[in-house]
Length: 137
Image (cartoon, rainbow, N blue to C red; front, side, top):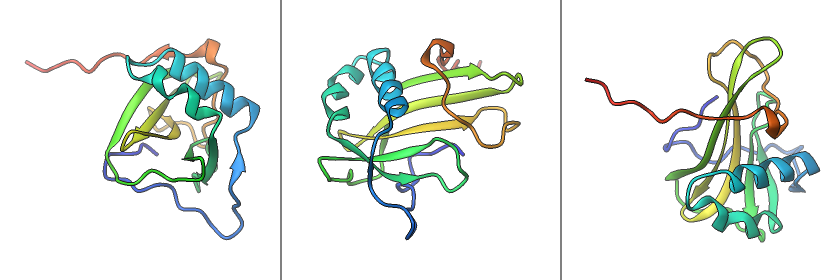
C-alpha cells in the first residue's frame, strides 16, 4: 500500500500499544536519513525520541511515529529518503521515510509491482536509490 499526501496516519487498533522502535527499524530509519535528500539528516536526532504509534493492517513493516509522544499534525507528506530493492523472489519493493508538517512521521515499506504480498524491510545493503521521475515529452 502506497501512502499518498491525502492519507491519514495508520489506524491503530485496540490490541496495539505505543512501543519503541525495534533495533532493525531504528537502524533502517537512521540509514535512510543518512542517505536521503538534503533535509533528511536534520531528522536524525528525532529517531532517539521516536515511538511507533501505528502499524499497517496488512502486516507489512510500515510504521507511523510520534516524536516525544506527539503525533504529527496535518496531512502533507514530505519524502525524505526514497529507495527500492529486488527481493529474493524477484519482486520490486520500495521503502521511504517521511515527515509531516516538519516532524519525522513514519517509514513506508511497499510493493512497487504489486506482486509481493506482505513486504518486510530489507537490510540497507540491498537498497538502491529510487530513480527520479522523468518528465514526459
